[in-house]
Length: 440
Image (cartoon, rainbow, N blue to C red):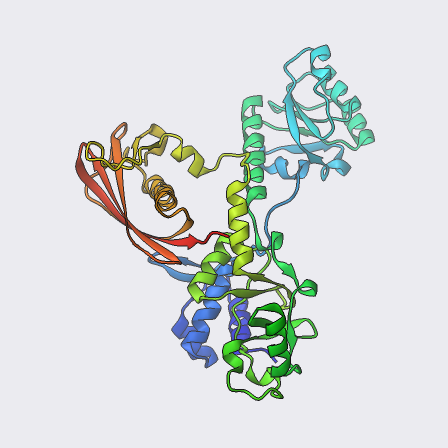
């Protein structure tokens, strides 16, 4: 029998795309408490069923519940972005490619670049096209040119795609390069799947276990929170709080909590870290979409992963990397220079009206706050909330300065005030809340 939480999730899944939902509306329709509706909507947001949009509300969206993180790029995937057409070698469109080369050299010069999983981008040069196919390299012909019949036959024989695109070589190469860069960034994002403990290696209970079993397991492991399952399906969670004052013969199914906060293995580490702090939970069950219990993840697992992310090399630039390239780290506390950071506004930081984009400013504020918290406390952090007030517009090539004050801090959170100055005049102010990532 489904729990009330599951019924709300199922109801949300049944709603048409674009349908607005609310806590009160769902509670009234399904006769459940507003607390149950709120928790279910929050989970639905985490797994991609709904999205909350400012001034619109919460709406049902098309779910993308699997991490789009293939280990390689295929020829099939690049065809739409170059508006291409596959003319031959269609049986090989799902082969992967690691790199591409431009066929602007002589035959002798280009031959040494023919490596496995390479795509040749070339114009109307049939001799180069033939040479590439003979060396087991797929071909992309630019400028709308078409290969001759013998070239298509060779591509079919080799099971290597031969593709044509109406765009010039530069445009095609730029689009493929961007796609490869985006894929590399996606591959660097760590998810729960990378770090959770599989259920066959984790401690769990079944409903027919007793409080005595719980106490014995707690004593032997030092853990006081366990998932409860029936035939591998998650049915509840039991904690030390649930068993206080209960007889040792009492069954777990009689004391366990049935409405459980869960996570999916495709959720990001940062998302789960935020959830643990918000719900004040040390351990979360990891479930499949059918609520099959596949593992658990603890706060220690998450913190370990967060520190691992910081120490990993990054091979592709993100939007944040591009923004902070121009940032100067001052971190000076003397009276002569009271500012912590400065930056000169660049053309790519502007909005359509020629002033500093709010998106860029918020990215700067996030990075600056994290840096200051680390400088002051030695801890890393994740931004949770930004409250920004702008007093004056910031123009192109304005040199702005940031002064950061960490005015409140505890074990889990820090609050910062950032004053933004141009020519020593206050032009914006932000109050930022960040979640502290404790050291291991």
